[in-house]
Image (tube, rainbow, N blue to C red; front, side, top):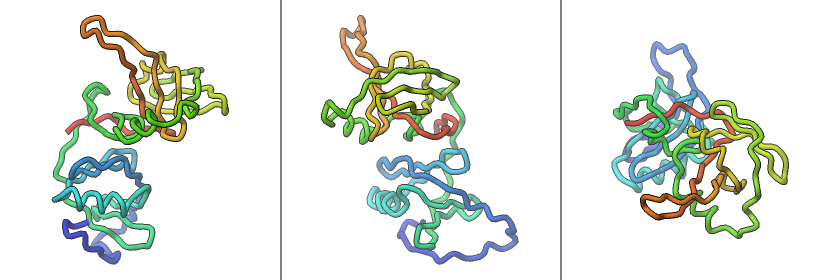
Length: 199
C-alpha cells in the first residue's frame, strides 16, 4: 500500500515464476506502525500517518494474503495494496526484549482492557495441564484448550482465562521492593507463534 492508499489491480511480476502469496494475519496497529504475521515471521510496516495506518488496518483485518516478493497485500475483493518499504530491520531476541505486539507475544492494551472491564462471570477458572516449550494445554469449564505464549514460565501462575479476548490472568503477587501488588496477564495465541524480535 502506498502512502496515498491507492489500490492496485494485481499485475504480473517480471521474471517471477514463484507464487509466494501466503496467508497473513493482522496483529496490531500502534501509531503509524502495522504489525502482521505471515510465513511464520512477524512483519512491521510504518506508514506516513496514523490515519493511513488505521485505514490499512481496517482494510486488512483480520486476515489477508501477503506476497514478500511483491511487498503487497491482497484484499478479500482481489485488489492488491502496495505496502510501505521494508526498511525496519528486526533481530531475533529473548522474550524479555521482544517488542512484537501480537497474540502470544507482548500484550496489546485493547484486549487486556476489554477483558479487565468485562463482567466477572466472563473470567473462568483455568488449570494448566501441560507445558511444552511455548505451548500449554489448559483445562477450562468448557473443555481443554491449547495456547501459545513467548513467556511460558508464567503458565505456572495462571488462575483465570477470558476466552473471548484470549487473556490469561495470573495469581496476584506482591513486590516487596515497590510495595505494589499486581497480576501478570498473558495474551495467548491459538496457533504456534513467530520468533521474538526487536527492532
